[in-house]
Length: 318
Image (cartoon, rainbow, N blue to C red; front, side, top):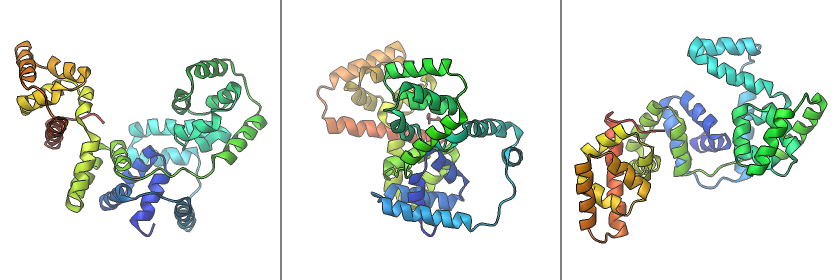
């Protein structure tokens, strides 16, 4: 790719987890530039996407001729790259993709892109396709269907016998003709944050650290997107207790006063009965609080939590 805008469009054309894997294989500087481009890009037209994909295809085909492939070559390459133990689950996923037969082209798609192709089809046809795809992908596709359809499809999968290969090929060809161009998802901060969530923790941290030098405001906005006050529900009690020790009690009282009951119960449950009672009394004494004040203090607590993570004192969930 000649520029970062083209790289951003290519990444947006890929499934989120695949795009994160691509970033993980790039040199750090290129990965940082590509992530920044994803965050800053606006709407992408089909014409722009088509031009980028055509150029990528041309560049790909201009590479030196590849050695002979096959399952054994893949196994050896994975073992040499990741080691035998780490390569095993990757090899298992590759075998699942190969086992999908004529539906292998769907295994690189997101479940949200596959579901519209099947939603108006008969439960029997959905069951046939679901039986061919890797279980995790089939489950994600079915998760977006009505509960009664899910039950019907599951029952048919359980009773499904061998299907004529020609029938499978016809169904796959029909789906392939309708799936069209890979969807271009809108760029922006939320998409860049999604890529960071999918990236290894060390990679996402290094990219954010480098982004601080290029665009500190954007880096801060990404950090806010990655962890907000409502994400407290995801924390384990030990981590939350450490956070409470390192932050101001009055801030917590203001932040919790109008918080949802699950958040309030989670935080107060990590305090001793005496301290929790004092916190409740502090909350009662505050009186009405402006929404802007509460939002600001919640942001301050979230900022403190992210600083604790940057210092290595806590580890936030992905």
